[in-house]
Amino acid sequence: MTDPSQTLSNGSQRADQPSDSQADIKIQDPPAQDSHPSSNGPLVSSNGWDGKLRMPPRNAVLTNPEILSDPDYSDPDAPPVDQIEADEDLLDDLDPNVEDIDLVHSRVTSIPALRLERFTKVIRLCLRQNQISSIQFPASLGDTVQELDLYDNLISHVKGFDDFKVLTSLDLSFNKIKHIKHVNHLRTLKELYFVQNRISKIENLEGLENLTMIELAANRLREIENLEPLQALQELWLGKNKITEIKNLSPLTHLRLLDLKSNRLTSISGLESLSNLEELYVSHNAITEISASSLSQNHKLRVLDISNNQISHLENLSHLKHLEELWASSNRFSDFREVERELADKEELETVYFEMNPLQLMGPAVYRNKVKLALPQIKQIDATYVRV
Image 1 (cartoon, helix red, strand yellow):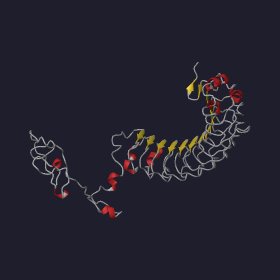
Image 2: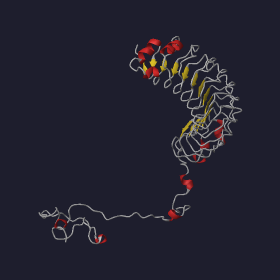
Image 3: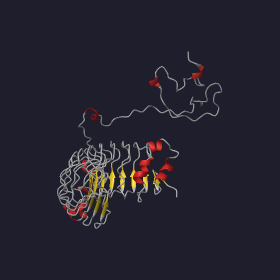
Image 4: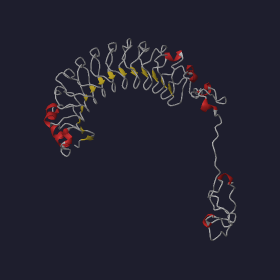
């Protein structure tokens, strides 16, 4: 027997209650509401409509079901590949005499489709964050382009630079490169970037005698090697690799900056010949001490970053008269007497970081005052400037 509360005022069953056969229900457009609904049941019109809009079920229909069973299926109505490869009109509004071309995040896949031969005076060419996998530049660009940026693409092989004669900066960071090759003819090159690739060996750098900076961070390097040809090198960036020992740097007598953070070092060594070194970054390693020989010949050091290591004693820094910044957070320093002994006479020292050491953790309320008493010349302690 049907529940009276489930019937409409005219005795018919409500549309939102299941009937014996749900498939028999037909959804019609809602009729106009009656101004005198029944007072016994739900508020409905004379035709039984309760004011709720109900849509019939809709099932999506796959227009090309073949794709589910055939992985090689190709839609015959899809646009051909050459129409979506690269937008040939991206550069149509540029003056042919332009010196800078900047196409960042423009979905470029084909360099030839850009028709770069139109531009006879371009000096800086930036194609960052695109989908380029093949390097194919017109030969004419080689006479003028000095800075070439291919950062964050899909390049796996270094080739296609044979015609570049005046290139000074080449950025191939964030690609899929496994080997350094086909760049040693770029004798005018001064800056070379290979950040975040898949390189496991430093090699094939002969001929780059004018290179002043090479960036090889975030690769798969285990050894520092084959850098002898880089006689003019001033900056060497090797952070975030798997290097266990500092070695083979003696030919780099002009080196000013060395970055080895986030590797697997257990000691600071191999820097004896680097008398011009000004900045050393060895944070996030497993270094346990600064030995008497670690920095004995590096009298020009201005910046020393030894943060996030396991060093217990602040020592063997007294000879670094030009030290300006010491980053030593997250170690095991606990004695303020060592801080005063090693650093108090450094007239050029302005910044020190000692947070997350026992120095700070054992007495956070008096920590800053103790540092200021030990080092009255300091202008910044951790991330906070000292009030004058």
